[in-house]
Length: 395
Image 1 (tube, one colour):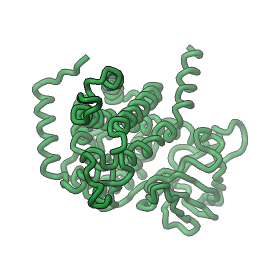
Image 2 (cartoon, one colour):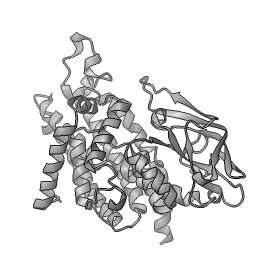
Image 3 (cartoon, helix red, strand yellow):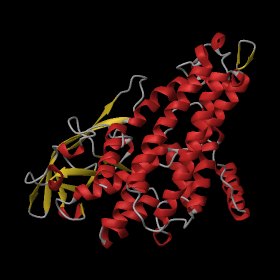
Image 4 (cartoon, helix red, strand yellow):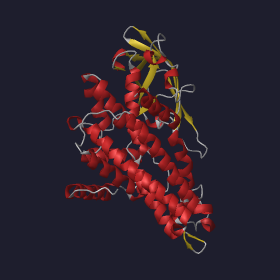
């Protein structure tokens, strides 16, 4: 089923394209196309450009700084940004903490924190996973003990994405050991420069630095940094994760990468004919395109419901599973199409006598391996299938 857009929606698409042409630098787009890492300045510059246009907090209501878009307009915006290889909006403050504060925070927290997220004064990171608590998040061990008007926090978080750039972290901490594990968890905000907070980089196989460990040793934070009620953080955690999982689905990114795959299949020749004419390969591309189109319709339906105030619920788990499978499948097909040309190094880092690979080959292997994480973080796909199955059996 092909999605059809109204003349007004197509005019909005043209507006987005014009904005991208005027504000997205060719160098940043090149980095995105070649799967190269962005600098903190790259991400902050894009954040500032979107904020200046009023297009940054796409999940927030208009009265708090959101653009007030329809579900279709948000879909168009995300699709065009992906097609242009614009940086993805750093989600931790805007798409995770922001919605949490709007639903569970108090007026003082909203008035102080939300504007600082928008103007870039604060960069937030996420303190959920621990060495012994990944998909089984309820088993987390980081403790927060009440001492007068403060909490004293001790413990460790891991896989803290882009924590090296952050000055703030929102954390799940254990404030009680009574009852079920989920009943003793609270949601607390912490300044990264508080005494006792230590961040250590986790170096990846390719030498990159995307994730970190964060250690808390007798870290004191005001009780006013608690979001919602004490020991009720599990409800907040689940709410936040529905927004995270929806973001991971990456409909726009998959649309862009599928176009790249189609282009490569027409350029590359196997057995004297374009790869696109190979029956088996063409069938695999068609299968993933059908799945993507179905997911696009589901994503629009979910965005429409969210616009009316509905929580994503099980749809977020469904989108997370299907979206990550599709993204990984497309990257696998790109790598298969390129064959030996799927170099693990960006083209500009190759010696002169090895730069004859197709332009679209640059970064293909890096993207393939990096995207293996998609089915793990944000709640592994196995856990998401269990969530869906339990709900179905309950019905």
